[in-house]
Image (cartoon, rainbow over all chains, first blue to last red; front, top):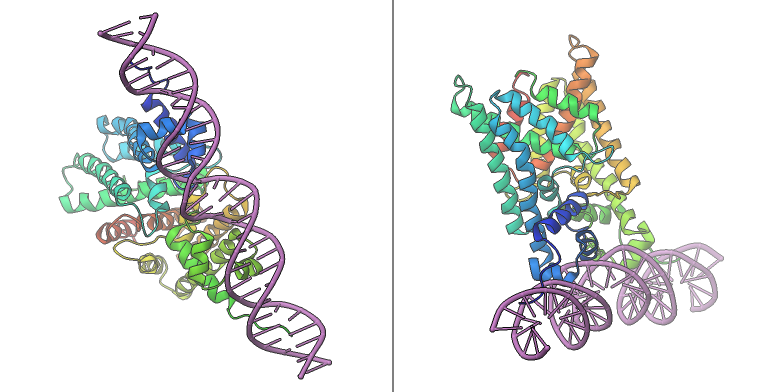
Length: 187
Length: 187
DNA sequence: TCAATAACTAACCAATCGTTTAGTTATTTA
DNA sequence: TAAATAACTAAACGATTGGTTAGTTATTGA
């Protein structure tokens, strides 16, 4: 009966996500969110409840976006080589100007301090675990490796992925290439 | 002729540094700094000019603190194995509770957004370059390696170091161990 | 011992923070 | 077409942000 919403929630969340991605959680103010999302504070609060609410939805949106990259990896059948390609794809994914804007998950993990919000932290850990399990699945394509080796390699890869994300913030393209080539030099 | 300062600048900066290290730049307020440094705002501003001033001095202090770890590495004569030990030392260095508080340099690199302060960014890049040069010096102990290989390995190590710092924030001890063992498995 | 002076205290600055709310506008169905 | 109702606007909330400043206190060399 009443008037209809003039905005689309997933659409404005994607805009919010990009702002958080570029600027971090603390630095991003409600005022900036209003401007970027193109809607009023009232609308933001009625749709998402709080700044943290907007952020948690943004994290979900980010995961979906990243999942499009991961789907390519899921269907790949060339094992570790597919993972290497994923690392390179990821650099393009985070590309901003000369440097990258990192990964929203990694950026957030680095931003949150001693009194970190548990809900946010849990969301981050869950995501790294998800990607790690995908790595394990792919590494298992090589049936000559035992499970302990695979577990260790998966930890190595997920943390390297994490590191790559940080690295895009201040290391140049050549350094990032050197990094990836070294990770996969025995592959 | 006037009264003497009741505080010691390097001493209060170390306290500020620890606060920034734990909480990040944005999250740390002047109020928190007053409390942690144990001196009044007036004293902070008369000694360091601004919040950014306190932070830049904190970065210097952090580098000095980290240099004590690096000195152990400088005098080590066991090449890459010394670097491996440095990685493990670093985990202890950043240890907070269950997780680590990362590296102040890495944390800051991840925190700063698109309108990053150039002075701060330059300070971060300078530091990574400094450590990388140290890695190169150590890797050159192995005279069988050519310079291109050494350059690539140094980039790999400094970015891995960067990644390890991020990783201490949300990965557990076993995962970090897996990570380091994989980095140095051929050493 | 006392004038000089820097270190200090504490109140205050405007601006902005995340959040709320009173009042207005547009849309819908009965 | 008109009552109902949700979407909207915009002003304001108290708290806190980084930063300043007037006035007080302590220490010093002369």
